[in-house]
Length: 402
Image (cartoon, rainbow, N blue to C red; front, side, top):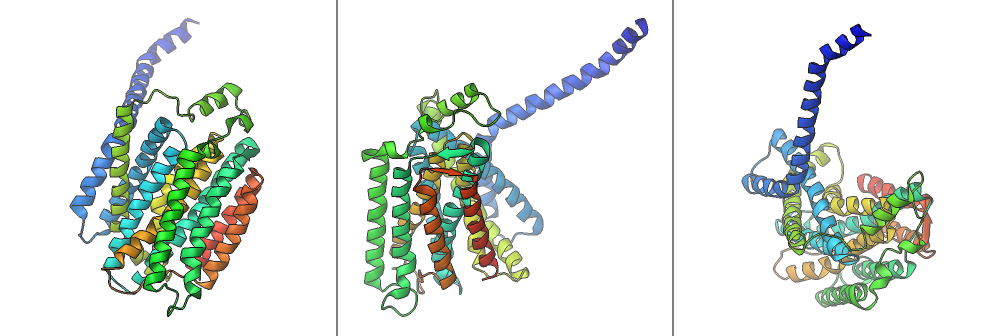
């Protein structure tokens, strides 16, 4: 007994030293987590300014990739802060519009540089955003929510209204150009003007419906959702639901700071993605892939913040928020991009081809039918999520091997 006490007392200095070291590391990690959302956007902006226009070696490309990943995670954090402050559906709308506006800027910047693929860049980017949101983001959200809660519920009226607008915009702007009198898969000047005005009108009408006249159709319906995930307590689920109602202690000042940092983060994400695009293009060429796949990769990077936010909402059993993000992003990607590109085409050289290819039209038609069948019942399981993800995989595969 005395030997055991002696042994433990002899070991206590080392043990206390290890404990102190562990506590120090924990404190350092907590300080990093606290300050990272503020510091990372400025680091990303500095890296973007310093390296803009330079030829990047392998090491610099790796550094940019790391900074880009950190900035995306920070953007997700600030988007969630704003969403908690303003509540749904305003939080989803802010993130969708912010990402799409910067996406438009990236398309215009890359298109103005010319090149053989500039004529179809807008089409490829918008279609990639459409497929990523309607198959990838919706699919993984339903899969995560279904695996965690069994069956997830959402408001079919709100989601259906959003999907109707998305399908109308996609057919009007991406399918119809193949069947007009213009030479090739593009609009004439007057037809492009009409498509731009119609797209903007549809988007504005939807935003008014979502935020003013029928906002209740786009709110998470907590009362009809399962009370708790499998293996979780009811109190934990209730507290998770309470965090998404918009009733929180986030101050207006903190929300405004997060809004500014979110915009800075998204600008940095798009700028760093553009810096990485030559490395991506070189990798795509080396792999023997079509250059149009570059737009898919960049679209994946740009939409990653929304994807992460949607999955986190699904883990909290708020599939309606996930659908708001996915369908709202798809809608904004078409409804804001086409008018902006139409305006920019006045001074941009070269043609603007918006019509999808035959393979893309088939994929879009299948996605539209599957998404309608997913949304109409107002509830879904992980099976529907798996179907959407298979369509997403088909889109990626056919982008690589058309």
